[in-house]
Length: 205
View 1 (cartoon, rainbow, N blue to C red):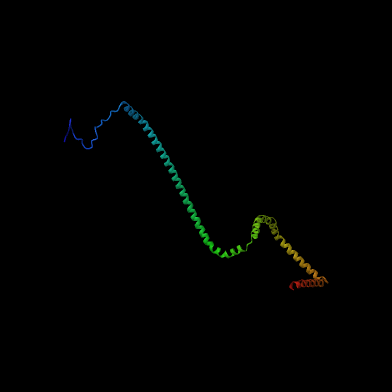
View 2 (cartoon, one colour):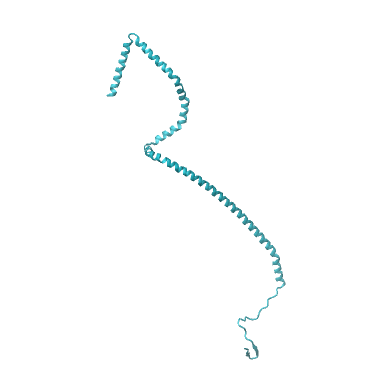
């Protein structure tokens, strides 16, 4: 519906949402076209740099993957070695447990002796034992050098001693047959018996 006004022509009513006159888009000028052309000409270089960056990123990803593969391989090798060590330790532990089980009765029987030895052992005795152990090499050398040769000659000395005892026995028999030596021998034996009695008397008292 037109609303008449004084001195003017009727103005049609404005529709809802009307914001004024519609603006016509501006036509790009030569400067805008040149800017667009410059942007388009720079686009291939930017794309090339982008492709180069993507290639570098892919290369780094590949290197990282290779390093990760090496790390995984190292972890697998370490795990395999650890499994071997655990298996060896289990075998050693099994043997040790068996050995301890076999030694338990002997150790239980020796426990009182070991406790007494620990209570009665003096540190000086331990020092003397250590000193003796230190001297064992020298002692073994001296025994091998000085004692063993003497022991090897005892086999030849024994017959000589036996002959000497036989000669002494024969000499005693011959002396006993001489006149007057029997009485001298009995007198010597009586004196020896009297001296032995005097010696034994104070000891028994």
